[in-house]
Length: 117
Image 1 (cartoon, one colour):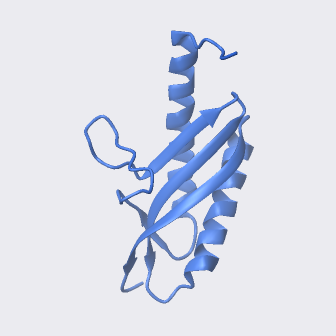
Image 2: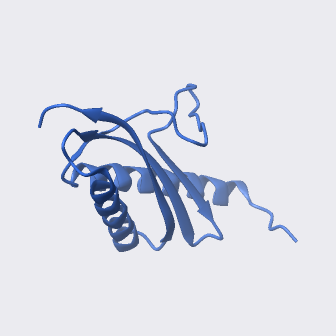
Image 3: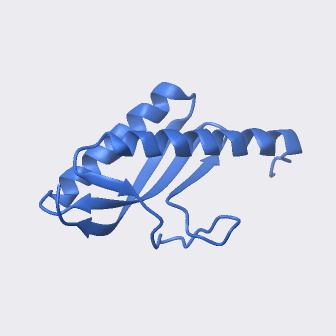
């Protein structure tokens, strides 16, 4: 049996999605090798209201778990799997420290490699 979601709960979830997106972007900027969080071609093809692809996509379910998908550019010369692993760990750590949500997954899409450091 599905739970009915009230408009107040929907607004609350939307607020938390925005907060988690902000925390995710901030955490990504702290990881060595990440150039930027970017609007890329995400696997889910998620689009915001203006029709652009989202750089960070957050899904909250069961009112206690968050699933995150982020698109980034990485500097040339960095080992991509190492940077992605550090990014996943940093995002999970920051979200769980700053909110009451547990992170179920962090999917990272490397959209581009940028020359120069």
